Image (cartoon, rainbow, N blue to C red; front, side, top):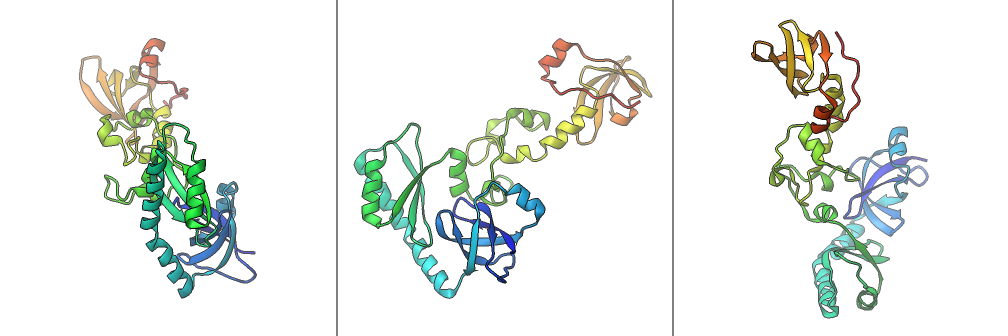
Length: 289
């Protein structure tokens, strides 16, 4: 039975979906799929292989029913046309009940099994009365989903500072943890306004190359170490990690940039106190001479 990677829902979930019988699908096909939430519109991304199955083994999946027909497209367009009106109706009920929550978006599941309401809230919200009112209004099951600011960006953001569509709304199936340490190691500006994404948090792209930077940094003599080079003894002042180069100062106070391969040996490591101050907590490897 053929399996496919399918993206579905406004939160752009990824899942492994099995085809029925001898049905086959191509990349980019818009399909009707049965998911844990009901019948939904999805997009086929690729045929699943062992590697993709291992990465998505915990993701909810389902079954592909058919390629979208013209009737399906028409029904889907009608549902989408109602979204703005549905959102305003939900907003009116929230105001009427005086709930401390901010509506972000609403989503109709294609098969009509449920209406999903996405919201932000700082504290726990008792929305039982709201659910009863909305269920009576729309005659369907109501699902309330509290989300964070990164999820809000995933729903509403369009383009990032790089000029491309935001990563969270394109290829990211899960948003990775990002820390200021990653920005510091990559020597990115530490101005929060320049390294924050549309969600106001640190940009996800700071995570992409961090493992490579960290791996190379482990191979370089630490800042503050005394080394022997072809020019004599010198002290490491800073790193150019991706280029695998060092800024060093020789005993006669000359500063120069050298390749890490030009270091013949490390004769003195920085003191523990200095290393702690620089947050150099990575274990050191033996340096090549």
